Image (cartoon, rainbow, N blue to C red; front, side, top):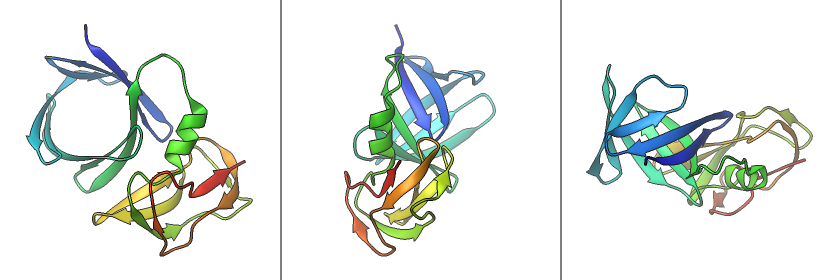
Length: 159
C-alpha cells in the first residue's frame, strides 16, 4: 500500500502517494521517479524531463526545495484527511532555520491573501519567502530588516 502525504505550497495542496515505483501527485498526470544523490540533491524524472532538485529540511513539517533557481516552501505531513490551520499558521510564519531578514513587505493593518509573501529571509545564500497561510489582516510584525531570526520565532502575527 502506498504511503500518502499531504504537501502544501502556499495556497496549493496535493496528496502525494509514495510507492516503490515512484511518486504520484493528485491532479498531476503521470508519476515521477525520484533518486537520492546524497547531500540533499535528488534527480526527479518525469515522462518529459529530468531535473535536479535540492532539498533542505526546516523546522517542523517544512521542506525547502530548490529547482532551477526557484525555491519552494513545502509543508509535508501524513495525510489524515483533516486540515490543521492553527499549526499551519505557526509553521508558515516562523523561519524554518536561522536566517537574516532581508525584506519586510507588510505593515500592521494591511490585508493579505493566502500565499502572499510577507517577509523575505536569506539563509545559505538562498532567499526564503515567508507566505501568508490564509487571507487575513496583519496584527503585528515582530522583526526588522537585518535581524537574525531563529526557528520557532513568530515573524508576523495574523488577526
